[in-house]
Amino acid sequence: MKILHVMALSAFAVLGLGASAQVYADERPLNGVSISPTSAELRLDAGEKYTGSLKVWNPGTEGITVQMSVSPYSVTDETYNSDFETETSRTAISKWISIPDDRFQLDGGESKEVTYVVWVPKDAPGGGQYASIFASMLPYDAIDIQDGTGAQVVSRISYKVYAQVSGDTILSGKISKISIPTFYFNPPIASNDIVENNGNVDFKAKHTITVKSFFGDKVVYTNANELENIILPEKARKTELKWEGAPALGIFKVTHEVTATIGDNIDTETLTKTVIIIPLFLVVIILIVLALIVLKIVLVVKKRTAR
Image (cartoon, rainbow, N blue to C red):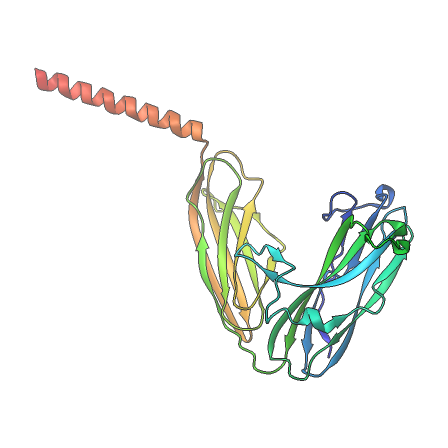
């Protein structure tokens, strides 16, 4: 069956960081491993054999050994911290995936098309299945190690597989909460939402924040490229949006919008609030001034009463 959609983003894992980074041609790291795309969304049938591929390359200047591996993929909480170890009924696909050429060397600037095969069991249940294919960077000569001690992984990067097996599938979910605080003692302005998935297949939700000036209704910030998240089955996902460039003092109207596409149903929720950014020291000064005014009024009243 065909891939419905592939996120054609690439990421760079740089030596010593193990994180994404943008690398220019004249700033290539000594070592690294990169993949493209970074995920795939599959529609599969029970009993099917599916063959896919991803590109792995070395953006650095020195040779590396790449070890490919497959792990379960799930999340541990609403903030979607990844779990690549726990096996569940939704991660069985990690056992169905094989990589024929799972260890190879790449010279600096060299790339390789890596093929993976998904063997779907005939009795596979319908619903979502999730796994992660890792490309791990090892020392260049790790492929020749014979002492049985293994090789230390320098960095690794993940290609996520979001699969849906045909059959008894349930699409169900809702936007359960949108929250925008009224007061901020310092920037950024931040809002968040929670989207719940009560079904057995994933769906997507888009999240947008728009900030307008309190006087004049002028848009001063919006996340122009809407953030789109995948909501996994039987999970709730919390998404936070921020205006990092917010000033230290001001009054604004903030709108947070969420649109969840659940099969043929589109659920949209919007919340707009007036928010105030005011430094804590200024709040303290205002409270002191108010306290002095109240004290002055009390003293004046007592003085008049005494007369």
